[in-house]
Amino acid sequence: MVLVIGQNSTWQKTCLLPQLKSGEVNRIDRVIFGAAGKGANAARGLKLLGKKPHLLGYTGGINGDRFINACKSEGLEGSFIPLEDETRICTTIIESCGRTTELIEPSPVVSNRARAAFRQKVQKKIPAAAFLAITGTALPAEPDDCYKDYLIQAKSHNVPVLLDSYRRHGARALEAAPEILKVNRQEVEELAGKKLSTGVSKGVSRFKVYKEMIEKFGIRWIIITKGAEGAEGCDGSKLVRVSLPAVKAVNPIGSGDAFSAGTIASVLDEISEGAVIRNFPEAFSLERAVKWGAAMGTANCLNINPGFVELPVLEKIFERLVVERRE
Image (cartoon, rainbow, N blue to C red; front, side, top):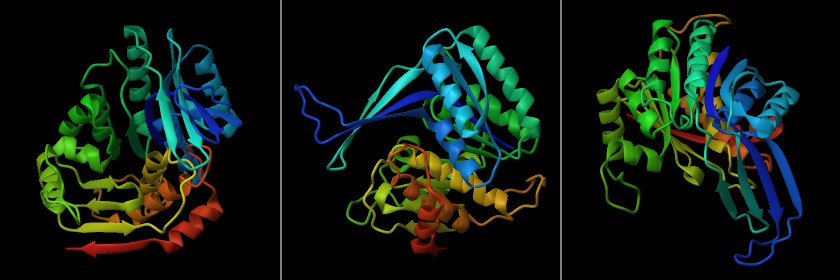
């Protein structure tokens, strides 16, 4: 079982229209509803790849009920701590030209009682987990060290952790040395406090920054998603780069979460059923993990539904990826 912590559940509304005109009346051609948020999207990707995700999050109100029912209809197992406040709605507006606009409602505030129940559920689920994914931001009123505490619990049971969070709670969790830190370029620059170099701009060597972060926090892998430019992975001794085929994105929402799912699934595919990971990452391939992550992220952006991947599309994308390794 892969325990996916995604506190900030979302009832997703995706609107399709020819063109969004500011200050005018806009008529929508099509609306798609569904369960989303980083946790749900990652869990959905893991299920597609044959893993057994268990999503742990907060839900509240009518939108929370919609979220839970949608998860059940997809066969996504989960535990959801009830809140008095309503689960937020995130609205994605997609124009026919491919431009997307995001409207994100404020997150609900968690109560002391709900927070205690969530912590108890984490403690109960972690011993049976093969992997822990901590995704997205924690809810308002959660203590700064909540993610760090979950990580420490996972380590006490030899459960490796992928951290896909970089703001206050995610940055604090780095102190507990997650095995994998998965971030995008902007996020790693904020965490490192340095501007990274590119092929056309000056900045600090990316490999140098990645290696410094690995040594500072005890991370084993740092994986950086770069949108259409692909992705990179570093273990402190080598830099792995994955170049993507040219595709026309339909909906990029959820691609980073699908990437996380592909990374975790790749690692789990390299161990025997029921085995415990005790010496991550020596026995596992960074190249393979980054490639599967990139394939999942790319396939996701070709689906109008956020967080959804179709296997035939995934297989074609995977075959077209180019992986480079630099020592």
